Length: 614
Image (cartoon, rainbow, N blue to C red; front, side, top):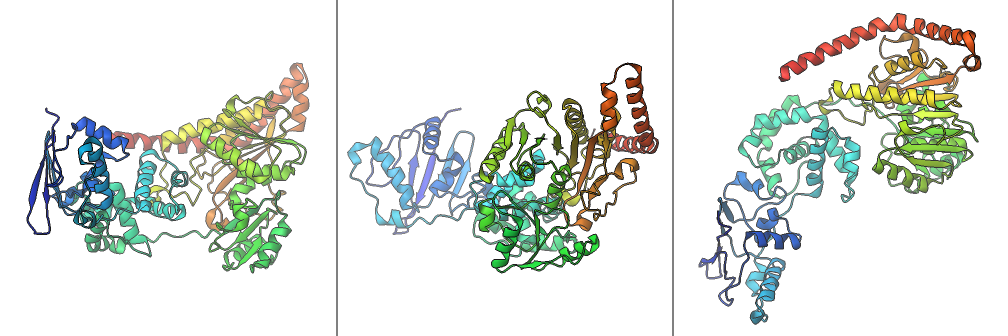
């Protein structure tokens, strides 16, 4: 195949007479005044465009081209609306018909390039018609363009919504983009059904399906509707009646879980009283507790108005505002005097409750809010070893530490399973908040709002969580309290992991969290398995507790086991063996049959689904 490009440009001068200018691989004419200009071959042209930072796909938009068939507009550039021209591509020849509507900027680039290669025509200037006639088409707004990229990454790779969106640092309105992407993911299956029934992607074969989903979401779910004049938006609007008709009564109205705005005071910068006085002076109304009853507290929290706030019943550093409160632009938030941290995220640190002057190990430290909270509880007296393996998350952690006034934190960039007591000596308190399914986070929208379980991923998570907990309980001999927590509603990541750890690590026991929660927290177990474990764990339920779901288990080292462990001979061994048998009998009798039955059901379901795939 020859590397030749034939381009035919059709011009419209003022006399309305069309002239054709023939471009081939050796020469071209830009105007009657211009002598032939040497044009490089395809590879050289592409190389030149790359050097000038023009994408090849934008070449058509650069020259003001339009595809002949409306449905083919996306073949050139999904993010630009094509002007009124046409382009036809073949295997070795590209023929183009273009109107003479160059912009001043575009023609200046072409003319300067032509002048550099043809010094004899350095005095050439464009006429007014060439400078004034071009009208640039409107581009797709960046929020839609970036949102479509985020959506694809989330769906195809299972990426976290918030991390994916907020990694787009160049986009200014990240909150709006996060809301748009979340709504699209939330209604993903329904959007696909609506698009399929309207035959949008069937007729518009070149339309980017990810961009289509984002634009359909904006059209159907946004109060502001879909505005803009670019080609993709015009196409979606042309299908508006069909899309709305097929959405119709099937438009899902999600049952919204009320969750107030939780604000944790950075006690390195402000005392809680100073924070309350500061908000009060700004015009906020502080609401006193009506009593210590938990149900009354929840009712008060639900009834907060937009200008009111109150103190949490359990965590003294936590303020509660209405969900309508906008604090992202508040000066105290910008300077890290307050943090927008959910109550569920604060509970593990509160239950660990390290005393000032002690040594704490946070085994999964990033992004850093729990780590900072630990340092605050230590009052910067003692040490917090903050371990994070991922490089990006480690940089996020260190950046937050440097901005908050915490001086007792020692970040460690390492695999936590390789961290030993020699590297982190004298550790007395350990916090474990491992990576989990996140199924209890109501802000983390699941596709289609269906709590489907990826069994392969869940199995890998369970193995890692088990290794992490056993490492904490076995490798730090001075540890006297260990808190294990997840943001999962799956018992496999919660009670099952705890049960296995207790069977192997008989030096530890579970302790009740009631005292740390002032005996006011109402703890309702979400399932009927592992009853012996559930009595001593914390479960938050979003609808009841107005926070994300979380599971917390508090391990404490047994004093009598410590003494027996130091003894030698048969007596010490029998003591440990009796303890193991006592723990095993207490749990296994109730839980083994339930666990095996449920796991067998999961295995059968997974097998059936895999057979269907094949």
